[in-house]
Image 1: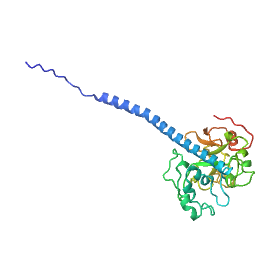
Image 2: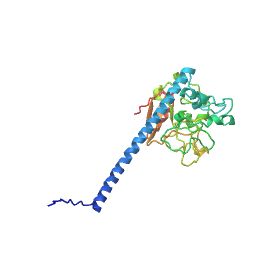
Image 3: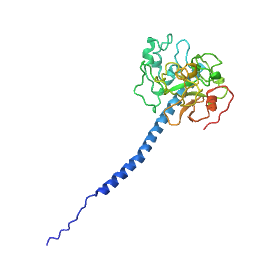
Length: 283
């Protein structure tokens, strides 16, 4: 007699399938924010490393020339980031620049259109590494500090009275000129490149490429709007980033700190100035 044991297999019920799907959906919903946060943390670390490279380049430049590079040059508007190229192992790109003409001259079209990877924050979304004028883009700016009596155009003004930060037009500052201390003074920060009321992004690195600390981090510039100056642009704009809640700054001593957009505005302005005698405590 053939005794065969038959095992009856039952299929999943609809309710069981729905429960499994719901559990999977919940796990995905919990996992995605964690993955996004991990990716942003990695991008923020990469951005920090870019700023540290700039810090090394600035100090190597100072060692070679006994001064920091100018924020920009009056005769041609070429920015500090061009002068730093040889100290970022980019001497061949530096050789492309013609310093006898302006940044906007056609002779500098090739030089001005070459993107530099260490001048980009990976968090900032972009379609192209160049703007419509074929100028290479960048996400970092040297600091002009707080304009004297809130005066505009700090980056393009060569007056020593206006030069409150570590960089300005035709500046030739030494370490000894930063009397507040290098650890208490902004050197480079992430720059806010677009204001909601203005469509043209200001994120070139070959021309001017500076920011001041008149306006709070990530806030709309309004201090010059009444004067008909627009309040935002490469000549007079503020710091900011795509990182949530603030942006990163390279200080004169080479340290990089993330500062909240809610930092006290006076403290933010004091950190931009190299010789105002104010000591600022920050995280």
